[in-house]
Image (cartoon, rainbow, N blue to C red; front, side, top):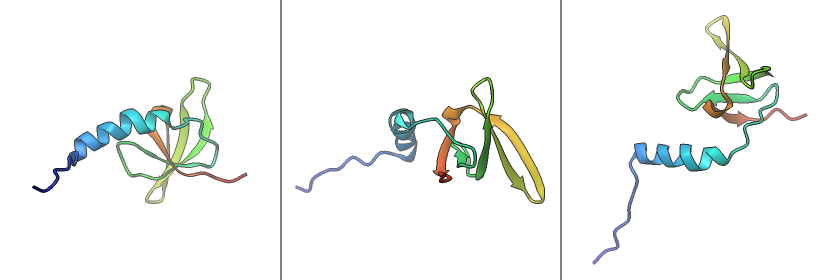
Length: 83
């Protein structure tokens, strides 16, 4: 008899990563860090931390510069700016 391995569905895997792995990651981003939303794939740059604890991020859509504030729990670090 061959061994049976459990392979979680993409929904279960996303749940596990979000609730266990990502919760243990530091949420102190630095100005210039490249981040994405957990629910999307748009690469953004951290601009500054607001007084309310949200991160102001900027990104381009075509030629237009966009910006918005996000909860640190909703962001994933892609590249850390050195310095």
